[in-house]
Image (cartoon, protein in one colour):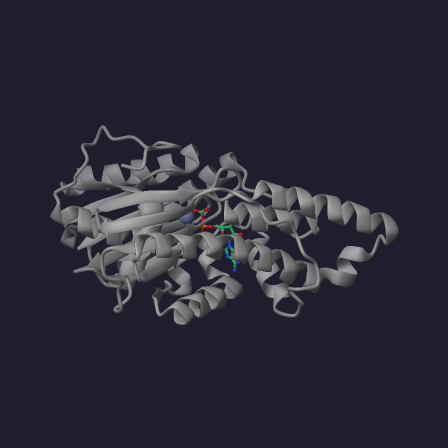
Length: 332
Ligand code: KG4
Ligand code: ZN
């Protein structure tokens, strides 16, 4: 039985997992950042401090488990906002000390990949995962739950950033990804064609797309100040279409290069309905097995930290109380 805390960005989350099954996954969100157009780190860490005790209590209550019953305490050690990570890591360390249980430090991006092992139907190893979040875009080759290798990643902006920055250019509030998804459903994805980067190998680039959207909008708004509100759905659909085509082109290349037929997506952007649909179609067309985590395990959550820790537990991959949170950390 693993108890886990996630606090790397602005979701405060706690989860309990027993024998690899999630018993509870409680998530508190922070609305305070919307008005600033992005996450304000200092406000995030303060809100984590207010949320952590009630969130931990709720996770135990929901799971109907007492703290003394758990076998280990897990937490997100990196990467993320350092103030936010410190709240979760200090709380987890204190719990491990008070309960005299092992402590398990988890890498947030590895946990996103392993969120695909939560559902009953799991990918077989080796599998490939396209992890698309607010801070990262990676193609990961998973040989086992504890052997994960990044074989492609973004050279500049992450896919989530591409969504959020495009949304900002359209005047939408933060985080704009879910709003682009919503408006895109009513729009024509072929109406506007935005630049497609030409990057070698399995790496990605999204900064050129952002610049091409900026120049395009500046030009159009000069002719018609109402251009964005008049064309919002088509703009969202066309932007989303381009981000998806950039992502899936490289993921397809990775599948063909490796010959691996179990393909997963993970991370906040994997909640995008257009990506889920296009990814499923691509896999069906090529006879690949498709795995997509349920919505609640796409964006940041402690269930994925718990499931990662569950596999680390068998390897006795425990940390001492001197372990510290880190904003950036090597993959291994
Ligand atoms: O994985 P995540 O919750 O946090 C990080 O680890 O970064 O990802 C957050 C990102 C944000 O950029 C957000 O806009 C994006 O995921 N996102 C979406 C959708 N839901 C969340 N992007 C597009 N469509 C969505 N439905
Ligand atoms: Zn994340």
